[in-house]
Amino acid sequence: MTATVLRRAVQVRRLSRSFGERIILDDVSLDIAQGEVVAMLGRSGAGKSTFLRAVGGFDREAEGVIRVPDHRAVVFQTPRLLPWQRVLANVTFGMKSADRKERGRRALAEVGLTERADAWPGTLSGGEAQRVALARALVREPELLLLDEPFGALDALTRLKMHGLLIELLRVHHPATLIVTHDVDEAIALSDRVVVLDEGHIALDARVGIARPRHREAPEFAALRRRLLGLLGVQESELEI
Image 1 (cartoon, rainbow, N blue to C red):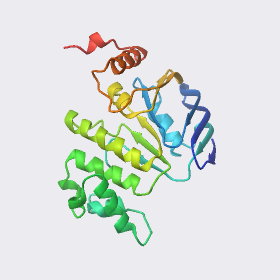
Image 2 (image 1 turned 180 degrees about the vertical axis):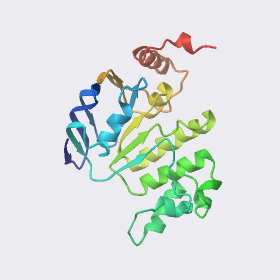
Image 3 (image 1 turned 120 degrees about the horizontal axis):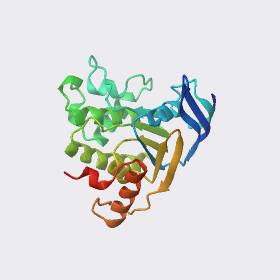
Image 4 (image 1 turned 60 degrees about the vertical axis):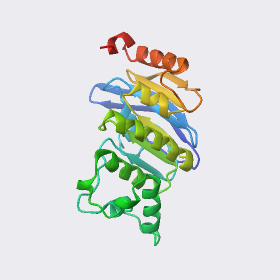
């Protein structure tokens, strides 16, 4: 894989990845502008996380050309906090700057956890732990933020609150952002563009084009949901109980 550093945007050209004889990604190309939020949907095994790992520089066997910003950060489905470090130390882990604690406290304030700076990770709720993970990513002021199912392990109410928090954080920090998710409503709520992966190819790359705040009951939201569910092989009637 050829990787080149780019200051202002993400460019992926002809990205391919196979595992044995199984082709997961087949000549996939994608651009993400600085400040743009792209959500990637796809059925299980479609290659979403494989794509994210390649863009993040974690998969050296992927083939293609990837140009990414200098500074990037990743938030995974699980917070991956160090249990032997307090919250503030987790946020600033690996940072060498003299003002790292001050920056860490500012990041915690942004996610509403100022009073939890000295707490142990084991005392946090799931939502609090994932907010710490967001603070840890954003304290480094990344130009590219990668989120791999970041809210998949949270309950429905906490997840909705996290959506609002993430939208505000992205507005303030303005990184190029790629969100991998299985949740169609989440993809529409959070992103500027939605990409659907299917059988190793991009089946759809569509701009959301819905003004904020976005209401799930709005006709344009519902229409895009139906379109995306159809591409994923799901009819809305199948979701009814």
